Length: 218
Image: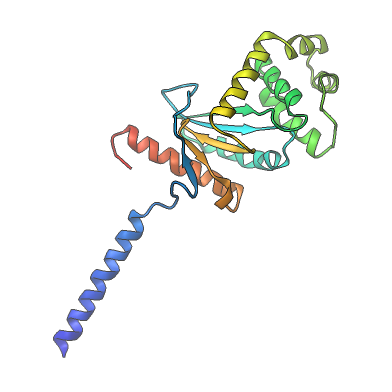
């Protein structure tokens, strides 16, 4: 009897250890549920880093609510991660705001104006939906109106906009915010419960890619 009990306990111990090992080996997030492996890897800005690209629009309330999480994540992301924003134009009123984002980039004032534009639209309900309204808004924040108008329809900004549109089509972006990691993985929001979980998936994929870069496999 004692031998039987001992064998049973040992068996349970081995089973428990096996279950723990299995749980540890099972990834928290899986392809096809929490993220999609894209058929063709897209071009990234800096191949020496792991890129996290956010497709967004200032007009999008979900993008506005995500921004707080973006800002906190940026403070803790590893140096080997490159964060890139790409505005989309397929929403109503989105193109003028996408142009405004690239004007910010050219002028080097994204850090100053990015959140301000979001707040103006979603908190103060300012209708920043055309060039004139955006020029006035930028002027209130120290950007010369003539300079804004010059850049708004410039070849450089128009080129950036065409490239952004092409990338959104290549990545099959159908809604925003959308997060793409390394031009390879698209985070699937459908099965995620919060903005925090979206970035949990991003961190999971970043860690996976960093291990692969170091030769550690999956």
